[in-house]
Length: 496
Ligand code: TNX
Image (cartoon, rainbow, N blue to C red; front, side, top):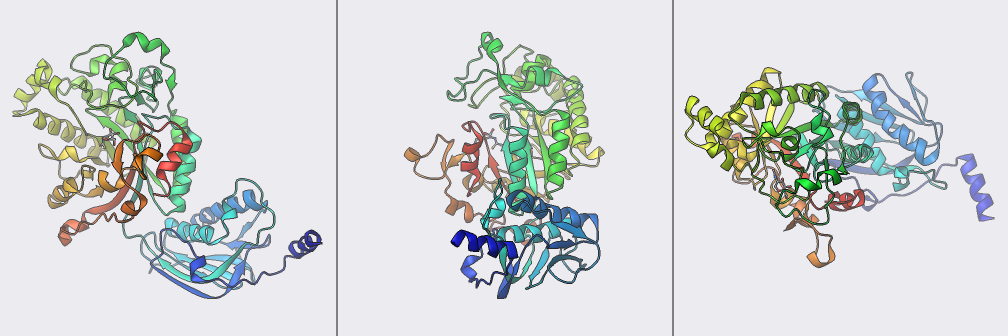
């Protein structure tokens, strides 16, 4: 009987009246202003999205797609105003970048914004107000798609809200990258930092240098055993672990991210963390000796790009030219971290470079390296960003800094007038433990529970107002030396 009645109930699409309390609302991150009102809005198969342009219908599409999968409905967009039961979009010049206003009433929902991300975030808030079943990957029966009447006004505090994923130490499939980007957008994050290169694997197809992925993308699978620091070239033919993204894959990922208001910032590491490149083209290093792509992730590895040979810079400019054609992002990340410079001290090419350029130390040689790349990147209208080591020995004025060794680098960079993204290891490293070590999967070390992450503020107390203006925002980093599966990655990223 209950079954029969519910069939009739749903079949007739009766309006559900539900009384909501504030504690029923779980929008993450918490909106700046939220007012719960009386009444509610119920979605049904006749609900339509009233849109005026492509940006609005692209935002609507995100929720239309969810209703399709979770309920089997084909909700429509329309361009004339319906009488009732619709979501309308209004362009409002008074709303700040990426901000939005959401008004939910009994018969109509209004999303106001001045840009695509704002409309999208209004939609993401609806997605979060709906019952969790809206996230289902299969068709769900018996759900009342009812949400409370609310008034929400929200805008981001920072323009850079990022997550970095290291796809070198662990190769993540394209579909998983897209899924992660969708979840970033769900949480109104807008930047995906793609750590494509590291010692343990080169992960992006470069047409001019095919060996980067023929050789550099593959290694012996020893993820369970950290690398012992010895090169064992005889293992090369067993190098079957790895993978890479073709240029078509990259285009697909970038387009998918764009449809979700997420910018993909590529990272092409230099001058260190590049054994995978040296394994492919040994002439890139000072030693010019063949090496295999190492497993595990123990640092330090001392073989890095030669800073003396012009051919190194030609190679990097060629690589970056292909990379910039694929990624429209304003920022291009060049790594710059943890460069052991012992080879540079002995290399005749590097010594000559230091003499010719009147450089007094290998730190100044690294600064020369990064400044030279900065000239190239800025000549293409992009902005160089790198890990805080790029400050050592001086940095080109236009470059931006990612502060990872605590907030020190960020303080120094912002003092010097550089823009900064804060990602201190203490709060933003999701390769750290989040609970008692004896109950957790192997992690890099450190203890970074969700409560600590929640205390993270990209603006440091001791900053002047001028410095604070240079803080673009914050970012979480998932380094993957110890990550072996997608579900393990999920566990480390969420809920932090
Ligand atoms: C340092 S953070 C690195 C990474 C490691 C990470 C492990 C940074 C710029 N470099 O290569 O994966 O520590 O936590």
